[in-house]
Length: 103
Image: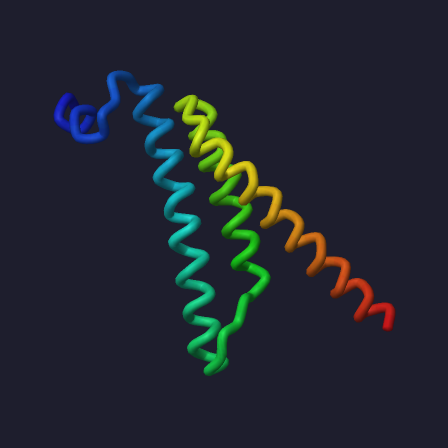
């Protein structure tokens, strides 16, 4: 276990689980790009599926929590803005879908 802690630059199980949590957030970001790429390839044009924004929001919130734990002001600022933008896009999409249903 000492070797794993050394590789991840952690000194306790608490730090280990925060790093694991941060890595999961980063995987959410990777997942969103894969989803967007696959959807675009299938449509044979650039497509931004709604799930892209959900992956973005989940990854952003997770990474923001990780950044707060690490007390990294640059990372906190960057993720805070991203989370706002991802949430705003989901609100706009939801509004448009509601208006289309009401016709």
